[in-house]
Image (cartoon, rainbow, N blue to C red; front, side):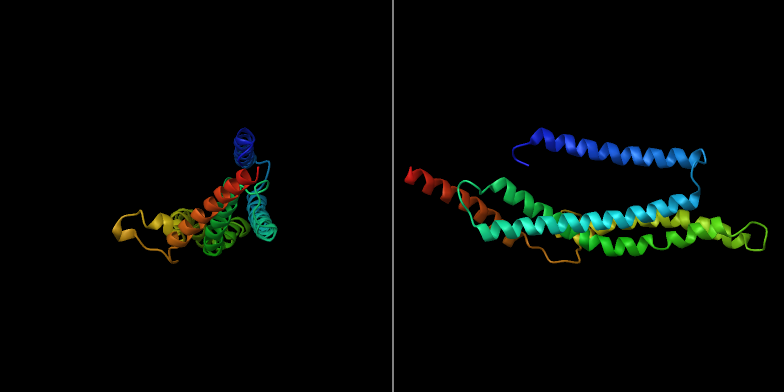
Amino acid sequence: YEKGGKSTILFFIGLELIHLSSTYADSFSLIYDYTSDIEFVVHFGVFCVVGCEAYRLINDADRKEMDILRRKGASIDSYSVARTYQLKENLNLMEMFTRILVPFLVFCFPEFFLYPAFTLIPKGIGYDGLRYFSIALYDLWLAVLCITTIGLVPLCTPKISKHMPSCLRYSLYPERNIQEERNANADTDIYFTLFQSHWQNV
């Protein structure tokens, strides 16, 4: 984080390129019938499961790293304000994603029934009305899902909701700014205390 600024930027550029390439590949395969609609839905479901598992692994790795830092204690050779701050920011983001994840998955769930209902029910057997209703509701549900996802961010993140208009300033979780500010000051004080002690012993 603090020693490899260029490598960090390159990593995120590469990650974004992979994401865009995957999106374009899926769109291309659907438009030119290289994959069926059901295969695309299955691919999306697998992506959700793999993404949740990757999120869990990253969250566990960050928490283990914080535990190691706490057990080792602070020393002038190993302590880093930037690294400590970055780990805490990572955990804060993971906490926000955890709060959003469950309602997001609940809202994603109906899609896996609506679209297959349109695709798997054959035409002309008396259920065309159900098929058209399913695909229309599926399109509507995508819009609802987008609005819900955007709305969940301030609802689950007090830091964001407090900057919104008063009529929208609502959060499901209490704010912890005072405690976080104290922790940030303490992390900085530890570094300068160690630095001062180190120079006094030189």
